[in-house]
Amino acid sequence: MIELEIQGLSGNREGLLMDVGRLVVLNGFTLQRQRLVQDPHGILLTMVVRGPPRKKRGLEDALDGCERFISVKVFPFVEGQVLPHFAASRRPTASPAPAAVPAPTPPVPTPAPAAPLPAPVPAAVSPVALADKPVVAAPVVEVMPEPEPEPEPEFEFILPTPAPAPAPVVEAEPFVEIVPLEPDEQAVAKLLSGLEGDYPRIMPGLLALQDSVAEGARESSLALAGRQTGAWVFQREHAQDGPLDLRDAIERIGAPALRALVEVEQQGTQVHIRDSPLCAEGGHSGCSYFSGFLEGLLGPAVSSGELSIFPVCCRSYGADECVLAISD
Image 1 (cartoon, one colour):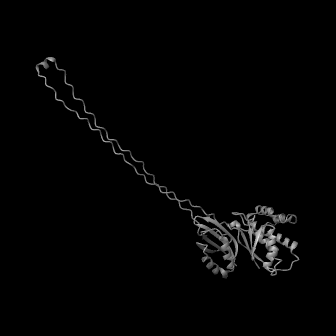
Image 2: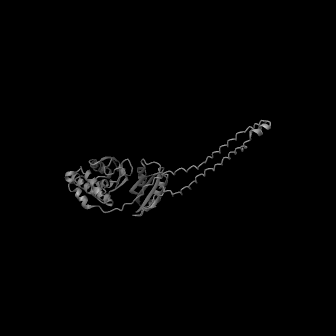
Image 3: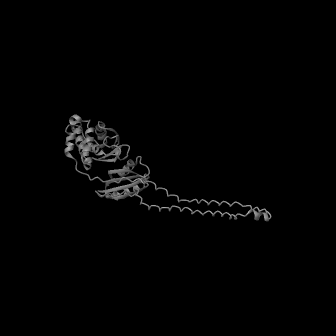
């Protein structure tokens, strides 16, 4: 078996996980984990799947032909290695600051012309001298006023238009791979110690369990709690029933038992879980509990004795509901 990481860019989030999950299942692969991230270019899908090597080419061809994707790529998945999404927006490089515009130099005013000096006043003349000379009227000289200097023209300085600010870039949340850990058996045993009196009102205890254990042990601890709870319900209510085929086992045993915990609808060999308290939007997936529950409950009931359960999509990753596909 090989594990592959599917990275795709889509223009629409609605129903994306469900459509791609069905495509993965139809091509012989099982879904391990998935993630949706909003990006300025669209919706970034990251999905880790597992399946036989001989079906890899068929899966790649099916993904290339999927109309939900603008572009899609398939990479080998390496545990513990974080692979950046190929279509995620990159942070823009900082542009140099624009050069400062020098302040304009004010014009130097032209000095006004000096006023003309008054004419010299003649020395005083005696009256006797004036009497001997005829009186001649002095010519009238019309003095024209000096023209006023024209005002200096005002210069209009045109400053360069500043460049528009770059559009803000929303950084895509990186895909962080959580290292899986073994289940916290002590925490699970504490939760199920009062199962006889608490069932089916065990949802508050499950919420407390997934918040109290280490992040890497969350899914494995919920799966262990689910298997033990499902096995306990089978022994209490269905141990005397005969073996059933898979569809009948889901209809008669699996779906009714799940309805005691959450709202469930059966569609063939799939169960659709609505508004799962363990799978809040934008939070962590709790589908591993329901998968473990069905495994412990239906494993002894089906005639084949083998059971495989995997999540097609989950509400915590943006889907409208959680969907589990069951096969034997």
